[in-house]
Image (cartoon, rainbow over all chains, first blue to last red; front, top):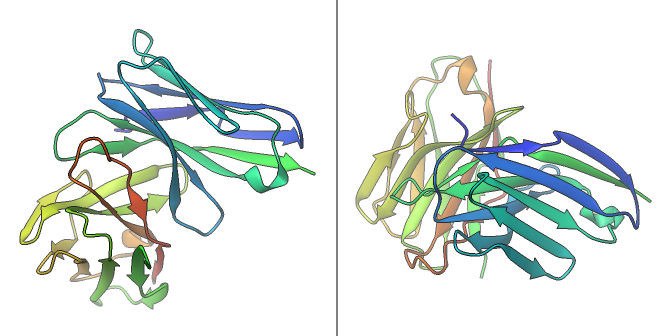
Length: 111
Length: 114
């Protein structure tokens, strides 16, 4: 079963708006990661937040983690057309099997 | 650095045929993984390797075999392809160091089994 589940499944916004995606997971984690996938390409790592962190920033990205609710959110501020992609959360529960990926949020940013 | 490369990029097989997907990484990563990606299913781990000469089963290993004879290469084999194996296959690699757990992905191989 999927460790991470993203919400919403699809999101369409205008350029310049903020985009928020949510991820829920089932078991305790060591860290949670967010990846981006452009159409027809492999996944690219965006940001990692550890279980003892509550918020992390990287450029226009802001990630929060609430371990009590087993949830995380990814905020992309001032979105650009180039942000159009699918975004996946990946929960790392430790052990050799490493991370398990969610089903993704498909983001469309309209110029 | 080329990062993670996969060959082939696209392949069409008939049911029952066999093939091998090759993954290569030039980052000296200890861990390597094979995933499949299907619509609405996210990525599912097929097999993984924590070092040269070692492999282990992931979430969906049936119908696949793997080998890691060299640290930089991780091969995924389909002995008798089935239409259910139509998918996009991604290879990934990562350091063993728990502070650098980022996975680096290849561009993917699209496989169609008729």
